[in-house]
Each structure stands twice: as structure tokens, then as C-alpha cells.
Length: 191
Ligand SMILES: CC(C)(COP(=O)(O)OP(=O)(O)OC[C@H]1O[C@@H](n2cnc3c(N)ncnc32)[C@H](O)[C@@H]1OP(=O)(O)O)[C@@H](O)C(=O)NCCC(=O)NCCS
Image 1 (tube, rainbow, N blue to C red):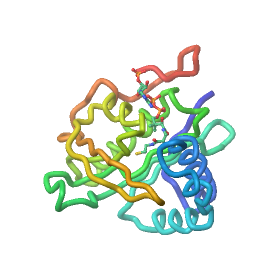
Image 2 (cartoon, helix red, strand yellow):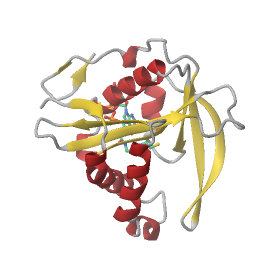
Image 3 (cartoon, rainbow, N blue to C red):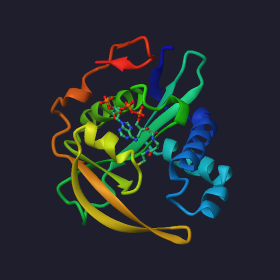
Image 4 (tube, rainbow, N blue to C red):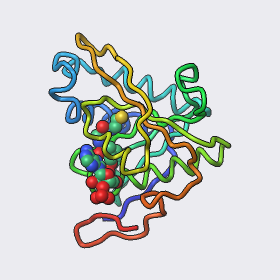
């Protein structure tokens, strides 16, 4: 299966919200209170994505399969926590891939594309916030992120610890950030 990455547009809003909500449910089960996950609103998510895609300050890419099915997305822009992390200008705000498409190299592809777009827009570095209990933090470590700080989040009826990772120089070519060219037999992309 071949995958294509392209900039998101308004006609993708429904598909992006669908990925976002589905992946929240599979990722945060037993991390975030279940009643919060059960009450995630498709309409609210679609409205948020409409605003984000309409705002040219944000960077939004989707990844789709050969049948144009959107299976993941990445989004970000300027660092929202300048007071806490003043030395960082860019932020990766969200990267979500349907569970059945994870661990095939698609996240790395999206990550590389996102970094390249940040560079085009004259950002020099970036951060990402992730819940400490979310194993996806290991993905960021593989991508070369350095642990920076922790902070507390209130989500639904529970408190969560968030951790932030930083990339001091997004121009540097970590091993994982080379352009990925081909798939191997297992459907996994190879550098
Ligand atoms: C995090 C995510 C985007 C990574 O995308 P992906 O396509 O699964 O990642 P890749 O296949 O490109 O993996 C790249 C490397 O990271 C590792 N990795 C990815 N997810 C991992 C995890 N949960 N735990 C440990 N390692 C992980 C892979 O094993 C791979 O390492 P390798 O090259 O040594 O084999 C994806 O798993 C996802 O959507 N997760 C759920 C949503 C989420 O938590 N998003 C982040 C919110 S802040």
C-alpha cells in the first residue's frame, strides 16, 4: 500500500475529526476518564478543525492511502507556551494515526514533512506536549526529542501529567528524519 501526504483542506474536516476522535479513544483508554472519552463531540471537533485549517498560521497535513482514505494527520505552528519555553518558536500540536495504521512508518513520514514546513516558514526549533502515560512519548524520543519539562493538565474529572520534548535544531538530520523512500515486505517504510 502506498501513502500520500498533502496539505489539509476544508473538505478534509470530517475525515480529520473522525481520525482524531477514534484515536483519542484507542490511545487514552485507561489514561483519561472513560466518561470524557464517551462524550467527545464530533461536531465540536469538526468546528475546531474548520477554524484550524482556515487559519494560515497553522500547518496541517494529512496522510491518505491509495483509495484517498485519510488515515492520519499532523498539525502545529507557533509555540503556544512561550512563557514556559521561551527558547522554542515552533510546536507540533497533534499527530494522530488510526491504530491499525500505526507502527508502519507513517508517523515518521508525517513528522519529517511537518519539520520541513516549519523550516520553510523560518521556524528553527520546536516542542511537543504529550501525556506522560501515553507510550507515544517513545515515538518522540525516537525522533530525537529531548525531555524538557512536566506540567499538570486537567482533563475531564482527572488530572494528568504532561511532558514536553524539544528539538533544538530542526534542520539537523537525525537518522529518523531522512526522507523515507520505500516500503518493505511488512508494509513498513524504510529509510
Ligand atoms: C505516535 C504516532 C503518531 C507514531 O506514528 P507511527 O506511524 O506509529 O510511528 P512510526 O511507525 O513512524 O514509528 C517510528 C519509531 O517510533 C517507534 N514508536 C512509535 N510509536 C511507539 C510507541 N507507542 N511506543 C514505543 N515506540 C514507538 C516505532 O517503533 C519506530 O521505531 P523503530 O524505527 O525503531 O522501529 C502514532 O503511533 C499514533 O498516532 N499514536 C496515537 C496518537 C498519539 O498518542 N499521538 C500523540 C499525541 S501527543
